[in-house]
Length: 349
Ligand SMILES: Cc1ncc(C[n+]2csc(CCOP(=O)(O)OP(=O)(O)O)c2C)c(N)n1
Ligand SMILES: [Mg+2]
Image 1 (cartoon, rainbow, N blue to C red):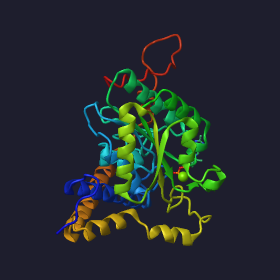
Image 2: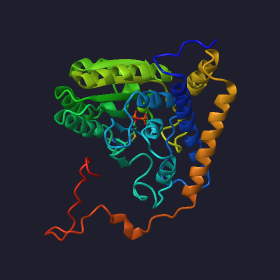
Image 3: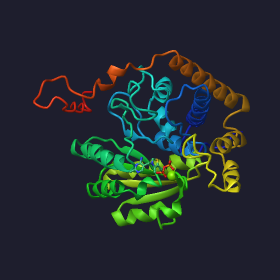
C-alpha cells in the first residue's frame, strides 16, 4: 500500500513536480552540449542543486496563459519556474543561442524575455531592480482588485543592493501581493554570503520592513511548495509582501567560465549528497508513489524533448544586423528621432 500523499498533492502532481525538476536539469545539460558545440552565445548559468527551489515555488502559484494568472520574474537559476509558467523549451534554447526566432530576436540572452499573457516578466540585469518592477506590477493588482500575486526571484548577493531595499520597502508599505524568493545559495559570484550581509538568515531582514518571512530547505521540493503556498495565501488575503528564503548551495561556478576554485571541494561534495532530484526520486519510490519504470520514462521523455527543441533552434538563423533596432526605437517622426518606443500595455499586449 502506498503512503498518503503530502500537502494535499495528488499522484499526478507529484509526477508533474518530478518532471519539472528533470526538465530543468535536462535542459541545462543540453545547453552544456550546445555550448561545447559552439552554439551558445554569452554565459551559461546552471542551477545545479537549486532546481527544487524554482520548481516548488512556481508550482504553488496560479499558472495560466490567458493573462489572468499570477506573475513571475525568474533569474537565470530559476529556469524550472520559467518552464512551469509556460516558457517554451525551444524559446529557452533560442534565447541562449541568440536566434532571430527567439522571443527577444537574439538581442538578449537566457531568461530575459516577457510574455504578459503567461505572466512572465523576464529580469533586467542590474541586480535588485526587479523587486521594484514587481512591486509596481503587484500594486496594480491591488488597485484593480485583482486576485493575483507576483513572485520575484533574486540571489542572496542581490539583496545587498540599494534597489532591493527600496523596492521591498515600497512593496511592504503598499501591502503589495508580492512573494520574494531569496535564492540563498551562499555565494554571489566569488563573494561568500558573510561578505554580503551580517545576518545569518535573510529572514532576519523581513521584520525591519514589517513583512512575513519563512526559511525553507531549498533541496526539498515539497517543503518549498508548502512554504510558498502559505506565503501566497497570506499575500492573497491582504497581508502584503512575504519573503521565502531557499537554503541550498550553488554547486557550480557563477557561470560556465568560472571553475569556482575559491570553493572548498568538500563542501560541494556535501551538497552533492543532498541533490534535490535524487532526494525526491528516492522519496517517490520509498512511499510507493511511483515506480522506477515511471520515473525512467519521465526522464527519457524530457531528455528527448530537450534534444528535439535544441535541434530546432540549431537549424534557425542568427539575426541580421539592421534588425537590432527593431522594436527599440519608434518610427513615429518626432522632434527627437531616437525617442524610445512606449512600453506596451500589459493588459492588451
Ligand atoms: C547592480 C549589479 N551589480 C553587479 C552585477 C554583476 N553581477 C551579475 S550576477 C552577480 C552575482 C550575483 O550573486 P547572487 O545575487 O547571489 O546570485 P547567484 O549568482 O548566486 O544566483 C553580479 C555581481 C549586476 N548584474 N548588477
Ligand atoms: Mg547567490
